[in-house]
Each structure stands twice: as structure tokens, then as C-alpha cells.
Image (cartoon, rainbow, N blue to C red; front, side):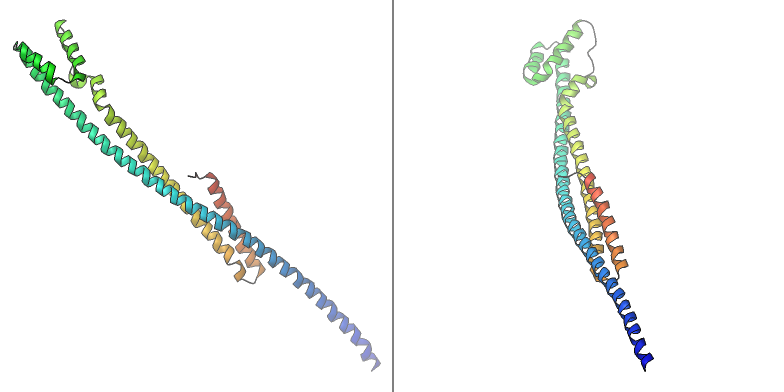
Amino acid sequence: PDGRRRRRPHRTMTVTVRRGRHDRRDGRDPLRHRVVEVVSACLLGLATVGSAWCAYQASQWNERSAEEARISALDRVEGTRQHSLAATTVSYDTNVITAYADAVATEQTELAQLYRDTLVRPGFLPILDRWEAEIEEGRSPRNLLEDEAYLDELFGPYREADQRAEHHAELSVEAGRNAVDHLVTTVLLAVALFFAGVTNVFRGLVIKLTAVTCSGLVVAFAAARISELPVV
């Protein structure tokens, strides 16, 4: 009996030591879990704000792209109108000058003067005067369709409208690309939200750390993209 009584304190001490170690280990694990949850909450906040910002930027760039496309279409319509006007003016000048030259050749002075005073455009008179001077000097006048100054004057507005249309079309395409880039970043941040959100679903510390790490990496990558993307 005395021997049995002496062994009991030894067993009690062993159990107490084991329980102490187990309690200390359990005390560390809840702290680690708490840290992981705090980091997960921070990542959730960052990803939420970032995704909202990127979605807003994507919407703004889409509107910018549509507006630039609308302006480009208007410039194209204006360019078509200017081209038709210039082509009609060339045709008119050609017909009037043909009639004027025929009147001069047949020595119908009054008819030629009538053409000059009433039918010839004021803007074409300098060219007509230059032609008459060249004929008096014995030189052949330059072909009307080869006169760069004359063509630039008539087709200049059309070319300017066409250049504006091309410029706004390029801006529209660029804005569309920016919208797509922001949309892709929004999707990346949604992935980060998923990993950060499922962290608290799991009980194991390792899988929680894995989910938080994945979320952090995606957030970092998305942040790097956002820093390089233009804003409206």
C-alpha cells in the first residue's frame, strides 16, 4: 500500500506537465488564427476598394470610347460633305472655264466678259488671270487638276475633317483598350476577394495561410497594374 501511494504523485505530475504543454500550444494557435483573420480582413478591404475603383474607371473609359467614336463619325460625315462640295466645285469651274475659253476663241468678247463677271467664281479669278497672262506670254496654262494650290484650297477642309476623324477613331480604340485593362484588373481583384473571403471557412492554419497568401499575391499584382493604368 505504501508503494502505491508513492507512485500516484508521480503520475499526477506527468499528466499536469502534458496538459501544460497542450494548453500553451492551444494558446499559440488561436493567436495565429487571429492574425490570419486580421490580414484577411485587410485584404478584403483593399480588394473591395480596388475592384470598385477599377469598375468605375472601366465605365468611364467605355463612355470616353463611345464619345470619341461619335465625334469620329460626325467628322467622317463632315468630310464626306466637304469632299462632295470640292468635287462639285471642280466640276463647276471646269465647265465654266470651258465655256469661257470657247467664247474667247470665237472672239465673242461680250459673252466672254459675261462669263467672267457672272459665272466665274471670285476665288477662281486669280487662276484665270494667271492663265491669260501665260497665254499672252506664249506659254500653255497648267492643267487645273495638277494645280496643287487650287486642289488644296478646295479639298483642304475635307482632308482636315478626315484627319480629325482618324484621330478621334484612334482615341476611341485607345479608350476601349483602357476600359478592358481596368475590367481585367477588376476580375483579378474579384479573385483576391474570393481567396480572402474563404479564409475563415477553413479551420486548418496551413490552408488559411495558403488562401491569404494567394489573395495577397493577386492584390499585389492588381495594384501593380493599377499603378500603370491611365485614369479619366
